[in-house]
Image (cartoon, rainbow, N blue to C red; front, side, top):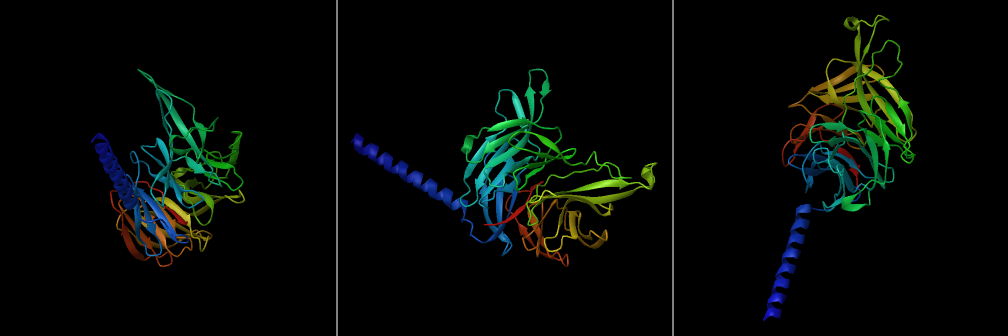
Length: 374
């Protein structure tokens, strides 16, 4: 009788396990199709969405572990694994988009009493075998906090769900976005743009920003939290600066300029160039994959600029603010995301809206959308 009971219980447990597995697989949705172009975006309460760019429809949604924030995402070179900074800036995750499984997890706070956060600062090596992040640790004492020096931590992406750093190096303060170049070096945005050897920890200024020596220019202002992975294969962000009339540096008569910084991740060549007068704010801006002389910016309006002529070509009013801009690989469609839970699709030639893609869940906040082909 006891043996029969144990056997029955084993059958029930096995059935429940199989049912749970089948249910999880069903919730994961279909695997991605090889050769198909997709876009990923994150939103509250803690979702990772995959959008099919052939039909501009939601393909599947993965439920993420722990908590949301900021939801910054980057695709691995295999175009199967999405890596995210999440859980209130405190954890890094790797998500297999075919089955929504968490295949990598690194807690940034590991030592007793030490709280660690990363400010949008992570990147993947060109081969996808290593993940880099700059962390900002604070020791939580009983009656005060001790702010500790930032450090770069290097993880093995095959380390599983309890990843520990392979190595660690001191980093400058106030660094955030970073991208790895094809030669394995790491470009890091901070007061200046640094180029770092991820094996020795040595770094140098690759592109001066706060310390640039542009005649009659103020130091630039950069507010950029979106590490775009684009068909142009560059590390890019926007800046604003005052261009003075003369050496008196009179702010009242200065011309305020918009510009972009771009580092070619294949060659390491950097471009710092103005593209327009500062008449309104944009949170993100990207050059067109079809015409690198065209700059598109978005916040309260969608705008298109001629970089060489430094003039506005066309602008479109939006139903609401969008933070993040992205192109499909061909540059034939433009996607606006961030803020609410819809992605607006535009024709970049006409700036006419094609459609809105509504996502399940709440707002996307400052999500980074990434476009890739499986």
